[in-house]
Length: 448
Image (tube, rainbow, N blue to C red; front, side, top):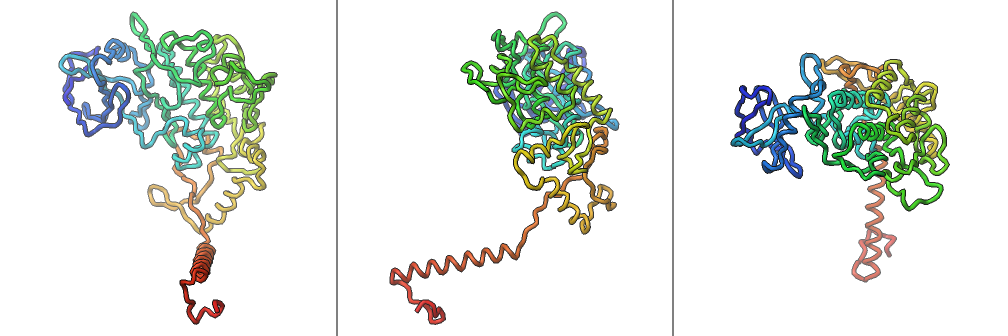
């Protein structure tokens, strides 16, 4: 497939590009994405199924008014943070799609992997679940959204599937940017989609469509995601109703009805789920969530910039510390002055010995005989992630992975297998004997 790539601000520098159909990365309802090379760089090309689906004016507005955070430079290399259009693609004079930064999908995961227990296993690293790393993700995400808002753009369809997080560095990438609400020179190009569980209360009450939504919608949905990230996936309006309500069944309906169970002041109509750890958060964090979910006016809702400043302050002031009961365990990092969330959940589940203590005991035994080797081949002593590493800058990410091996008692396994085989033989012999089809060998004296 041959196209012409160009930028509206520099149409004189048009350049041809060939895209191979075999380099397909994925497809959606209206377009297909391919990997390609353009001007010596790896890029992704989004090609729409037909020309009528391309909003050329909106793409041009995105190219003319880009956020400042499309790339983040580290050690002289650019890392994408937004799948933002870089060049438009023409096919025989008609707009066909655009080129955007290539996102490494093998090293990044959708945001819900960091709070959904089932998805979390795919990260293959227990370290990634540390509370300190979740603060990094929250800071990076809110900074990106704040930059969008500074340029007049709105995310609108905020959901975990549109947000990818890189392991170790915890950089965040926003996808499907052409679906955002874009501020152009003379007009706004609205969003067209919105996702359930992330619809602001005022939008539900007024039955607003995505085209009518703006920054207040982003601030609400962003707060929902932050709450889920810190609270194991629990939605801020999930709870136990004291009295059933036919008109408040979904999370969006509960939000519209003001049924928020996690406030500093208890809600008389709904209780939080027992496993929620919201009471163990920093006090200012709770106050910000109260502003996002209790107040009726969207004007008092924390902005993305206010959230970014808050998480940056927590990280800068080292608001986290080790658990006194299970020190230096990534699952047992807590806010200073608060109890440990992992210990709280362990007690809730009735555990006699916390998993963190079991892991530490096993790690001590293995560390006596096992050496870990770093990238340059030098042996280094294994260590647990502690709060000192938790506050590292994203560039200095830890490469240490937890030992995920399983200790197997092979002698016990062999005895069990032999016993089961002998039992099966005896049962089969008895069955055949009863049927009169089997004459026992002379060495089986017990068979008569």
